[in-house]
Amino acid sequence: MSSSSLPIKPAVLVVIIGETVLQDRMIKLLQELGVTGYTLSQAQGAGRHGNRQGDMVGYNTNIEIKTVVSQEVSEAIFSGLVEYQANHALIAFRQNVEALTGFEII
Image (cartoon, rainbow, N blue to C red):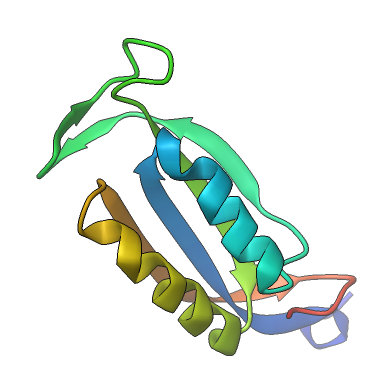
């Protein structure tokens, strides 16, 4: 099968890494924006807010959420996350990707 006949669409991969305490709020934001899928993982690392080693359940822990969306939805996600940066460890970034999909990228 040639690459031109594959169901590939341009999309944006959004990655959010933040404190576990933000998990429900971040998922609610994605749902409100119509995001149909995401991947959530526990994350460890270090940054300007110190080490996040996940050494105590629910304390000093981070999560990572990944989702593939349209450019417009990625803008809305970023806008919705800004309010949390003042009081929480949170970083978000995006990258243009090509997605092999059988569904519509929102």
